[in-house]
Image (tube, rainbow, N blue to C red; front, side, top):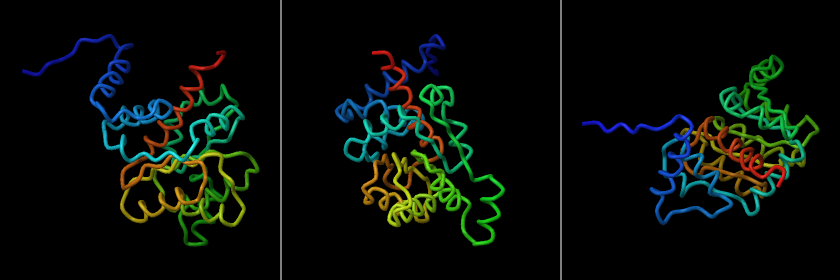
Length: 213
């Protein structure tokens, strides 16, 4: 017989997080990282993220400061963009964009024979604004971010590096970790646009909880 739990809709997320906390057992993440790690597990039902999510030193506070200052959030996919809570972002003056479908990006990528994700990172670098990158699909985006950093053309406020896949995925993530940029990275092959969006949301929700305190 299949057991069905009767639970009020408003309590489903609360119960889900309680289950995650319980099942993590002695693998509980540090307090400042727990809301992010647990939201990623909540989004994916994958407890491997408790071990594979990498946080650069002080990154959570750096990310929150960037959000409070109204940093521009740039994603590599429209899926990641659609998953970000725009109302929560707007409360801090943050705009969220994805340039991958822009006509100029598509045209330049075709001319140069490179990915649109790569060109869209270059477009983000030209914004002249503090930028938070949420990359959930394209290793070429992470590689180009690192190249632009090395050239002194980009200084990201945060790089969320969680592309999923097989070709250059692991290496591109390690390039970001080694860059010294503030970053949250899912080491290994796992990740995705949904993971990128939920990390942004986890940061936004933490800030929402502390507003006015």
